Image (cartoon, rainbow, N blue to C red):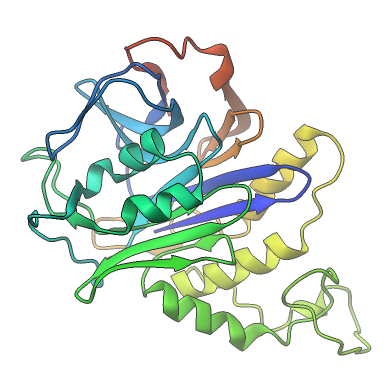
Length: 314
């Protein structure tokens, strides 16, 4: 399971926790502007926006977990089991395989307005990357400095929702999370700008009691509410390093400690946490075994190259 967050407070930041049971061999990968994309519908794209993010390098093809392009548009895919439905290719539709959706959107769109047009007639297909890499049920958050979207495809078809929270976790559908947040609007002791804040004035016996009732478990609905609350009340002040650090602290509020969350495959834990400074195009990340912050500066790479630029496996 996973949590993704978009923040625009004294700068625009986007990132996520990847909560899984094992490594996929992921690494920070920069896809430069002249890398040749060969998409599943036959499109060959030789000139496009550059992308930086966490991905798997599959024989020279980047499969992104999350990424940001050279315009600052950001996107992440999160597990969406049970509700997710991928279709066969449909004639007359824009057929995009699930594994390539992040690359397709970030290579071709510069903002949310363009994303809305791009996905307006899209069909997410169940085309597999290979026999070994079959489709993972996902939904996606896409964000620019001004707004965010959630993209889901269920039995009812493709759905594109405005996401005013700038938060996404996992199943159930985004419409559930949107309504569930309303159950916690009573929470006070918050930043006056917070969507959670009300006018109730109470006498507390201890600091922090304004968050009584805030869910603390690891479920997707609880993480959605908790991440939104912490994001809304967090102060993004000081230097750039302070604001990036603050973003990681938001992610750590929904962090999976190994042994706490058991799935059919094993114990899920936060393999990595990421924060992209989307204004300066710097990708920061920490891993479960190493919480020291590492940074990859996209602008220092040769973005006119036609070869992937890969870092070390995390």
